Length: 108
Image 1 (cartoon, helix red, strand yellow):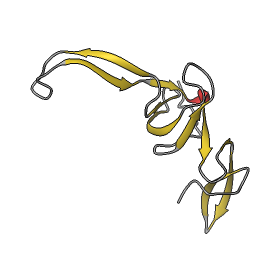
Image 2 (spheres, helix red, strand yellow):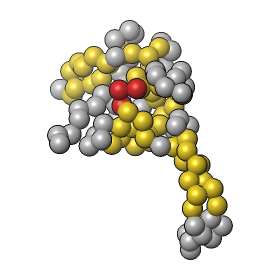
Image 3 (cartoon, one colour):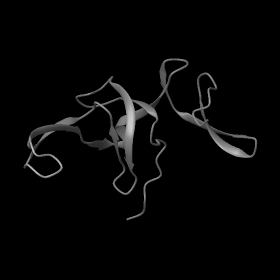
Image 4 (cartoon, rainbow, N blue to C red):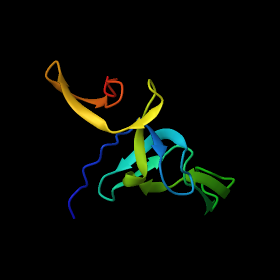
């Protein structure tokens, strides 16, 4: 299976557009291009029962974010406070992702 081309990168701010967490914004922790999924901070939080280990001697129930499909999130522009699609522009011989609404660059 080929890797899916995704418009989302690590540390982007995104908004969930569908599902139980719709309307929630968060920072992307991890991108999984082989599965076409992303892990967003504070979204799709699941509980995992862990055994005590040397690293975690307490064990117990741990909450952690699970992956959601990349098609269920959109990039969130902090300047215009909207979800947006990206536009690619060349600035100083570098391809930069730009907000379609206000022109703010996402790549610094």
